[in-house]
Length: 183
Image (cartoon, rainbow, N blue to C red; front, side, top):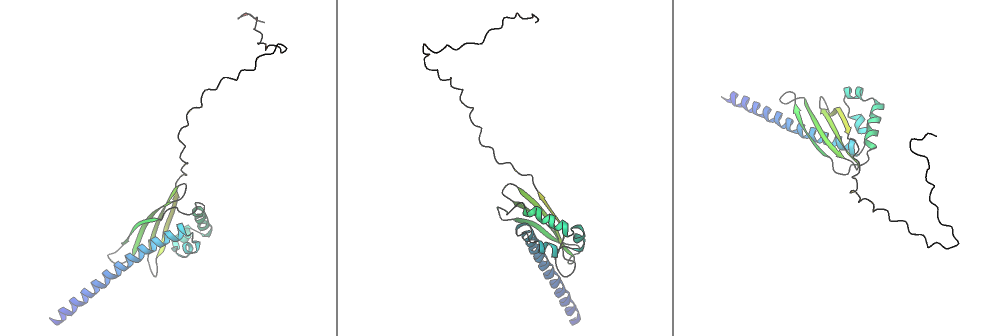
């Protein structure tokens, strides 16, 4: 009977330990996902981006591609609102191999962009597996309300009365050719 109680206590302790580790991993992963989007999209931290890429992501984003990626983000300027990050952490097995997917919409002065991020924690620390930054087309500035059509042209001011010394304006000569006459 004592042996059964010890075994049940060990199993209960192991279950509690696994659940608390799973909760901690989910909390850390969520924090890392939000931090990664903040550091990359808002603070434009190229060193963070480079140091957190997974080996496969490093192959997909060599240094030149990393610079181009960051330049595309930097040219949009600073976001005009706080970035709202949505996502969740999942586990391949019940308690092990955490990974997560996050999405953020970032509003800039003339448009917005979407950022998608996939992270994992294989051994040691969280890493970025995939990242995508999709800027939307620039929104044209709202057009001013349609202006009323201009008022009809006012008649030309009349010239002062012709003086007897001034010649009278002549009208153009009328054509004397008959219609259909060749010539």
